[in-house]
Image (cartoon, rainbow, N blue to C red; front, side):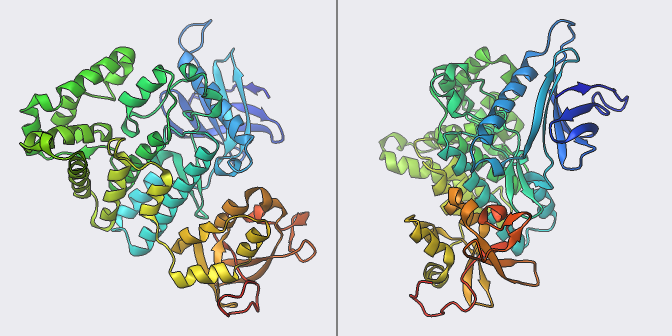
Amino acid sequence: MKADATESSADKYSGLTIDLVGLGKVQLTHVLESNTETRIYHTTQPRVVVKMFDLSCGKPDEISYGPYMSFGLELANFEDILGTEDLRPLVPAYYGANINYDKKYAFIAMEYLEGQDLKSWCAEASSGGYETEWVEEFKEAVYEALTIMTRFHRHGIILIDFKPDNIIRLRERGIKFVDLGAFFTPRHYGQTDKYVYSTTPDYAELLIDASNVQAGVPPTEASDIFSAGVALFELATGASRLEIEDGTADEILGNPAIFLFRDSQIRDLWRSYPHLREVFPLLETQLRERRILFSELWHLLKGYVANKLPDWETLPAEQRDQIILATGTTFIMEQLPPRLQWLAGPIAQATVLRSLRLKKVAELMRLIANPVSESVREDVECHNCLIQNLRDLERSVEFVNGLNTWEARLNPTTGHWAVAMPVAWGQLLDSAQFTCLKQTYSDEHGHRYFHIVGDLEADAFEDDKLTLWHLKQDHFAWLGAAAGASRRRGVIQ
């Protein structure tokens, strides 16, 4: 791979041409997104974008260390994910990367995703008052994003910087993650001291995680659960920090003992990471600005409630925990729009002090879920071909008990319920490439229904047979019972 620059006056890298293996010459056109260190460009290849890392530092014989490290980390994480079959489809396709020391830039070429990040998607919905149908789509998108998070955890990867900007909802309703630079992967276990901890302060518990990384203690699932809780709040409100009423803020400011110890810890962190002064302010500053970081909310509430209740120290620990959680849940709920106030509980339980927090992402998912009815669950268990296939493979069918309303759809030609193809893929994974399919019906809304068949009966797909793997992320494809399947309960097809 090589590149030759033809700088445009419109932007530093517009007009740059790079060679990509398998794609040939690709020219950068206009900027899609930018920050201080990187820019993402559209290109003359509609399906390709290029992330440029500016390595210039003003000195002729040196490059900027920060962007150089960011490039290396993101490239290494891409390579880790590319080597993992069931993670590869959950991020943009990778088309190549290179670094040019002479012209002081690096780039990563990847797939252009047709869709919207969740933050902008939710912002559009807020202007329409969050219609009922949209709320269901919102639950589906969030649930799928959390499902993807559990997939990464299964492979020992902690996302670290999970936030709405990095979650893309595709036009066909699937979810993919972008911006892979902060991941903590199995490469880092055993050498945590060499890991470059990089995150957005609003979505992280810096005092815990930064100290742990310095001490060689790896981040855990608790970090991603916290980030997910903050992300849910931002999706609902457009803000990643909480507002605090003037009177309450002034009352706390009038009693500095509530926050002085916490502020001393923040100052200690500044000594190690001076650049955090601007983005991770003291609690005193947060109170004066009336905007509180989630990482500080629960410590602040604990001190505030303890100060208000004279018998606080004599209360049982469990009762004190319940008071803190209830107070925080109410505080959060008051800031959510009416149609999304049901999120207060999940947000609170995901962001509360670690001793009280949900232990697994699956627990957060259950708080968001909309389970199908018992009759639908029974129908799927008795008649759906996926269930029979899993049993033939001697695999668990426990997923049926957690099936959501958006993951099942009635096939009017069979009278039985079909399962969303991404759900089926999540159960079969390595077997999906060998699971042949035949389409049995399509409705007026573009939904297509399939049945598992032998390879001789399978539909053609390009130069091969159609398999579940080909439809693994198709939210308009459904796997159900074959036409003419028995409608009697309890008969396994």
